[in-house]
Length: 463
Image (cartoon, rainbow, N blue to C red; front, side):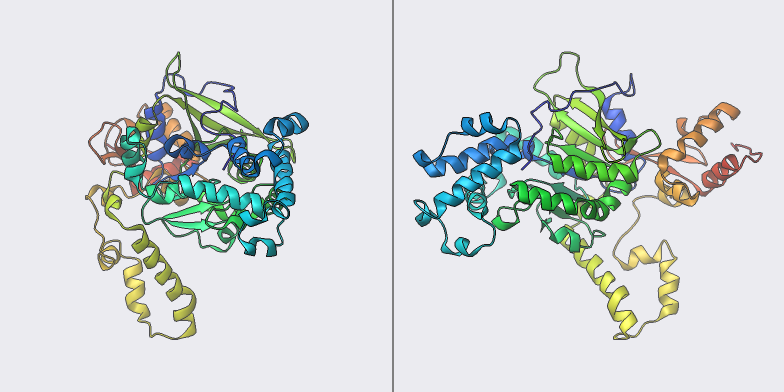
């Protein structure tokens, strides 16, 4: 549960990006540079939209209502603590602690009185409320959003990161595994199909990040979270839904990511916040949000897409290839077994290994996929095997955005735009029916060409 959500304009746009370019083109441009599924960062605005989940204030009011006339009204805390919602939450939790040990004792499971966390009572009330309002099936959700449900499921994200406590995402993304709280720190993030509840989950009330001590503890661990999640933020496009970026710990996490992933101008190029508006007078637009880093004085910038239709954004992110048929649990099982082979079975000598066969298959782009029951969708992937990110890897560059100047240099020096057509260096491969459903791929010759350009050598662009 975040302190701000998709429907709060917590951040004002500060500048316009990519004038003249549509959001559809911008999303396609981000996706085509990565040969992996996006990661979704989902906040309370989504749960509020689809199942009426309370925002932060609403959750605290649930706790106060439980105490009835014994509780002070929410306005008392708002007047006392202003907009400091963590302080308000802590004060409400303290009041419920006193109430639980006196008049409200019969309202709680006796086991809660053995907990070392005095705020467990408010956490248990909120968790119980979320469990009660969470539908058991997708069919029980508001069917006015049925098209959005189908579209968001079709994204098949590599993983989902959330501060939400409820189980809505597990319902929408069948087969995805919830990883809760501190378990993220112990989890292998090389797998596929996980939902990381970094602020805890209602099925375990003790895991919830809710009050000042919880946030202080989370803040201490945020860099460990950031380090664990860096692979996602560095190697995947990340789309943020349901946040106004008002949650202090979400901002802390993004600061930590920015220190590592931002370019020289402070832009985190593959992380985008999507903000829904009921209406926009000038239509969908692109802007930026700035996150200040008080520790080193830097500023990190994220792109913001202001939209009036989440459905259209979900459709643009939808997977368009065979992955849509893959069971996430099966992929996790395969990855876990391969990891066990590599880390334990082979080094421990518990199995016999034909290293000659393994070496042959490991370097054979045709045989290994067939062994795993996979096939290439078309021959274009053989002639043009690289995404721009992989081209950057081949050139030992830090990221795909560093290849763009080389493409521009070729255009300026030779008058040839490599991306304007399908050729021996570049192909735009269709992956679906819509015009934007395509991925750009590059050949070995393109890698050699860009290397010559980068090294300042003479080069020729062949027909």
